[in-house]
Length: 182
Image (tube, rainbow, N blue to C red; front, side):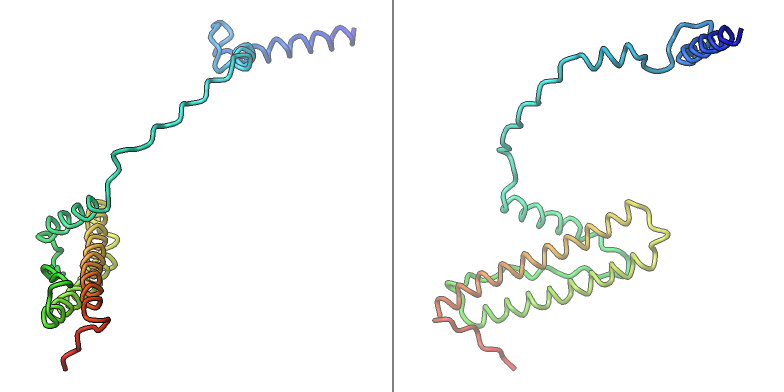
């Protein structure tokens, strides 16, 4: 009798465990994948490897990036946050192959002033973010961060433009830079 009882218990346990894969004993819809589903899935052939992507032909050039940065800087120029004064752009840099010493010196002063004003503007933006961090919306934070990044990009752009023309000026004048005026 003990053998029969244990067999009955095992059969009941198997029957009960098979029933747990169903939503209800009277319904025949499985709750999750059945073992048959898993076996069928394992016996299917592997999917074909994806074809390699074609080479990108429409990537922006450095010229495109510079134009975009300049356009964004001009567009953002009128939206400086309250209390922060956006620096004025330094203007055109003279051609180093044709400019005289005074023109190069004036351009250098304008670029240095622009860099200094830009750094002050970025410090103001940083202070604004720190003072209002808990109250800023994500949009406001991203806007301030974008203005900060655009200012840095513009500083680098104008400094590099000046340096290119300064090197051209030095090459034309046997390696001598414009003399600093007291």
